[in-house]
Image (cartoon, rainbow, N blue to C red; front, side, top):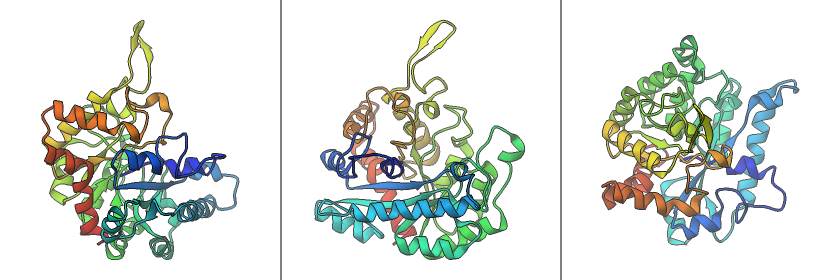
Length: 327
């Protein structure tokens, strides 16, 4: 449900979506048997602090990434705006790309921008990244920030997204904002790239109560492959008490999938790898990119997951949410 490849490609020379040196490209998606991939248009408002209005500049960057994705469409890849598009492209042996925005602050208090992004093909919006914006507040280790809910504009944004046909994404959002989304959304809500907080106590992860609420809501959480969200010492090799601490591994991914499945239900867990959203040394050992997903399926089988459960986690649960949210 999430990767940051598009934003990386804007800075890459002599590389493209078809084939590159990053974690995700169309050629390897095809080889891995994938049908679709969510591509985030990620922006960090702080990098535009020198501009008169950083959010306006961030919005322009989102439009540039959408344009890049559109120019990348070819016989093997297309932008999907509906479940029908995904199924058609699957029949055509094309990878379906679902475009998302990671940082709802680019709306800058303007719902006309939300409609414009929808018209451009955006079908999921991550309401916040790591900064407070017009919609709400991000996750934080500070309790007063974590308890903040959505702004009035944020609540209206959730309602507008329901009307337009866009998935509301609560990853990165404060706990208070999460619960406001559950209360106000009439459609399933997604946490596109978040793990279980009980297993790894990071504020970016979801509590047991949140996981249960996503299941009740009909939504899903996409398991994030970032080592520091999988286990406390998992963000790359390091030293602790004079002993080497190994990075997270594939078993840690499966541990989160199992735990989240037990709390939210097998209909409410998906994958949100966050490929290309962090340094490679924070990837789980054995995973270098989309070409290694078979290793995860094999480990899930060894852990006792059925073929049906694996298919739901890999594809079915997300398709159900898309059918209910975007049609």
